[in-house]
Image 1 (cartoon, one colour):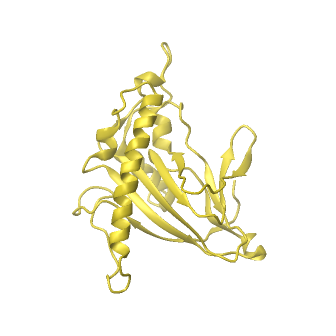
Image 2 (tube, rainbow, N blue to C red):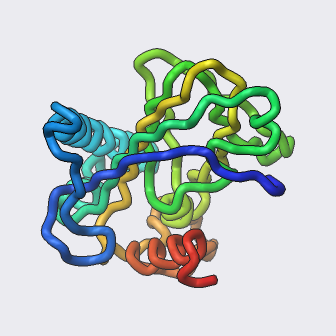
Length: 227
């Protein structure tokens, strides 16, 4: 779909501060305080705040599916729930380099729900499946962009669709910045069709799978383990 483009970005990612353990768990690697004064405390404060916001978003999602408001609470807000926060810088591009690069190539998110905070430089686009067209996602001050991931599409039997998106390299004299938060849930949670997402007589579209098995498969496909 994208052709021969190269991603152009750098990032710094953190998760919950936990000892080494299961897949996607472990301590964060921080720069020295003297090198980046206040960086760790700022990132940790933001991580806690946006994780709390994501819990509220899952409650709205539950209500939209005719479930109890707190249906997803244990899944997304337990000590061992997997969540990650990544700050990105996309280098500025001129008309020539923009033809040969992408900030991020076309993809869907692996997990359950993503909260994205973006600046006003532009570049984020979503794919409209019925028309086969890419459409820009405009910057809205003090607002988040919410993406549904592959895991939630499977869990809701397609009631909510995973968002195919990309970041083009906009021609600008400034770098683009964004901060993205992924809430992926509990590793042992079995993702199988939510009862309110299948009509009587219908069969679920997907076989049950644990969160860990799903994420390992997607990471392997994207980063080489399964290639």
